[in-house]
Picture 1 (tube, rainbow, N blue to C red):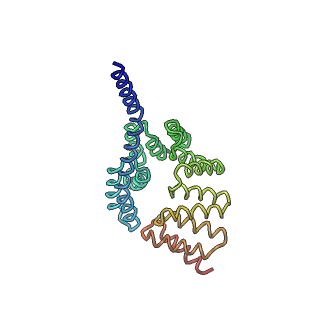
Picture 2 (cartoon, rainbow, N blue to C red; picture 1 turned 45 degrees about the horizontal axis):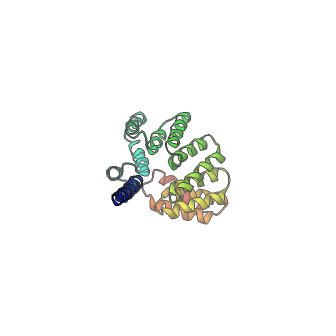
Picture 3 (spheres, rainbow, N blue to C red; picture 1 turned 135 degrees about the horizontal axis):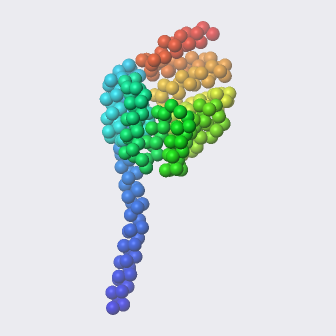
Length: 257
């Protein structure tokens, strides 16, 4: 009898351990699933941006839709999709589209961010981003949204702190480094701006905005040769950019200095 009782206790302990470990096992599987989805989606995201840089927005849209189908929570892909759709439909229609997505994903802070960035009033944006952080106090996108709210209010110190928090949570996202560099630029901290923008460029060498921002920062620091180099890289990466003619004109002027 004692052996049976002892065996039952051991079995019970094993079952208890399995029950306690199950959430961690499930969490690990979910993370792996998301990572797999992201890996599958990234090539289509990159090809979408490449097509857009080449002046082929229709093909860019087709590719970004595939990226979102493979990984529906791909925030950067949603941001680019919103950019593409903004040229096709009204702002109200785009907001309604993401309002529907938000209602389908109420517990996901990413969709609160994606909805909030389309709103016109800063107070409404701030409320949505705050809600994202209530859902996940370490949501980089919640902090990113609040960083933009602070920036638009010219609260640059506060904006920089929010963007630094984004980088602390997700150090390999070039968008976060680019925007922190932009805030530093407006604060007159040109060396710090160049440092952050350089990180953004290194993390994604095909990120045209980082090059144009670096060109501006180098120009303000008086480093005209580096400014020219960054503008040349920008025009090389984005031959169909909407501001191509303007940037080319600036490049000609700088070469004449």
